[in-house]
Image (tube, rainbow, N blue to C red):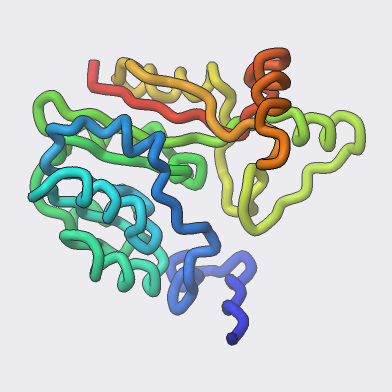
Length: 229
């Protein structure tokens, strides 16, 4: 097996940093987010579709459903194109010009925190939603207890390749600021819940107990569904 090529540091042309490089993020079905997609949604746009795993899962849930993707990493975009209805290679929302029509649902799975202006991206998204359309997705929770301990006790704020302190994260959210992001861009939130509790597979009950006691501090992310006001 050959090593995955590393991403260039602080490139002058950001687009080139994604050429010939696989996404560093895991392929995930994210069933809890997929459950938020309305069963009637016939056309879905998956922003940051990675290799198409999430979108392919959505297509399997409804016969005849179209799922389009937008992905900046060219190798993953190529893989996703073999799984989805169509894939635009580029950054959102600029790459919307390559995608036709309106959508019943647009998904943002750990994507908005990578954007310079997620507020503008969500406003643009409203223009491409069909009547009754929704957005779904997941946002990381910067109020996660391990991060706060590292920051307050150890004085550490160390960027890594993926996770809460992904070195490409430009925005950070808590429950309230995530809801403000959606509300301030003209959406009404109808589903919002925490996911990925602390703990591990050996002690799942302990994770649930801890989560009940310390609330949002236990969770790494929030899932949401919202619709234009």
